[in-house]
Image (cartoon, rainbow over all chains, first blue to last red; front, side):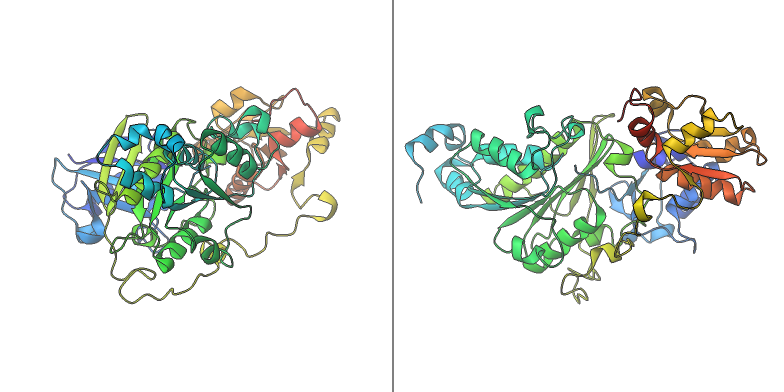
Length: 91
Length: 384
């Protein structure tokens, strides 16, 4: 099953897991399965209209899904899906 | 321009490498680099870029050194606590290398001064700690065509890349919009491993030096992710977005905007209650102590994390971390008089907002959290 990498700020919603394996062949299916398993994650990934928040980027391997068809981006069983939220810390 | 014999001796390990050599060292000496912030990321950058012989280094900072900075901001020492960061940083940099010129910009970078400050430099390295300044630095760098060595950190994770390189992507191509205020915690709220900004800041410094020398493959179009716990570096592809409002083919942002507003932060902070008076639903630390001493029956809920609870606690409090509140609601009774506290009062306010949606009404927030308790009631409770 594809592996989803969970970034530090969101691990509080995934029982502290840094990666989760979920079934699915598109990014939409995989994130759907992920947020049903961890409902608290949903409002942090999606806005009220159900669209992926614009400060959360999702990659299949090293490619941004915005250039792979977004939710319809294909994911193979050996692929890694990475969630990369915006962080601003520096001090 | 030439190097003096003293400089030749100092930079000898650079000079004997063909990739730097005399030509490269002179490029470094002629270079002008602006560091925005002299905190966690700025500190290692300033130290190493000074040592490397970058001829002109500008510093933008208006903060004062605090004890809680010293765990990571290695350019400042214990003796510097209370001093302006910019003064402390300049002193250390000139001690390391008196052959450089450090320019002070003791101010907050704002829309009305950013272009003026940045225009005199060749390169910028962004080591700030908040979204409005991140977008401000990005837009100013794109408008002025100055590459920006970017780094950001959170807990055990870092991100680094170079923005606004000719033809390359900018920060808005990566993140078109900032998160709403409060959704992404800052280092002050979320914590940061002290060593982490050293690693990420030095990735930025490395990119600065490479860009000056024109050596190697710059970190352009690639986002470097660093995970300290897993000790893993990963690289993701980053593309210039042709529709980007700043660096795209038809830019709509052609001058600096109001970045506080862009990031959803109210233009002026809400005025504090006059004379430190309490808002509705608040109690101050002295009031809480009096409430305890009066023997009145109430429940004190601490919504901080267990590791914060270990640092110090208010007697009689029950720990229910904010994130666990929804599933531990059964432990609270809506009929009770409930006082909620956290470190400073922010998370407890969120907890109260949530509890109100769950049928609780008799709720009071401890103003200023356990820090206020330490200040006003019991100084033996450590501040952190």
